Image 1 (tube, rainbow, N blue to C red):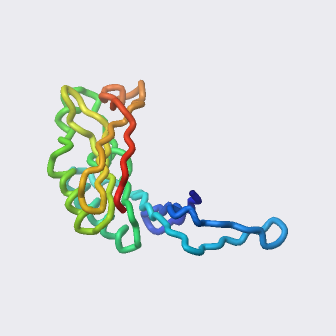
Image 2 (cartoon, rainbow, N blue to C red):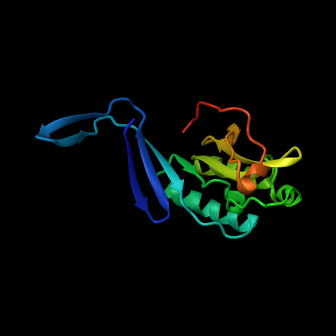
Length: 178
């Protein structure tokens, strides 16, 4: 798939040809002409947004960013890593547990409902409350708000506070209705 990137305010766009019908041809010398006949693009909004300092403010800003991405034509909105808390990993395990949120909690469910309302897939990232610790997690919702999968980062760092996170167990693949 061909991928092109464009910068539009705080959203970085990735476009991928999902039809398999994209072709390029030489027009003269080393220049290339792009033929876009029957091209079916998948538009991914890579939300490059700054956290706001609280779970509720991050939820609100995330909702606004998804609405903006949909207005711009996105098929999928992808949040920065651990959006729920701005990638803050508390040093002490008891603080880690307090700052983590449940995968089935209101913060995550907000984005499932929003996916259905906007008719756009959303990958929401968060510090997940998990067993006795926490995980760096993403939940992917399809455009109908149905959860496609929950993935926790498998290869966590062995240094600084991230060493306190529980690693995920597998890599998931799912069909996604976009």
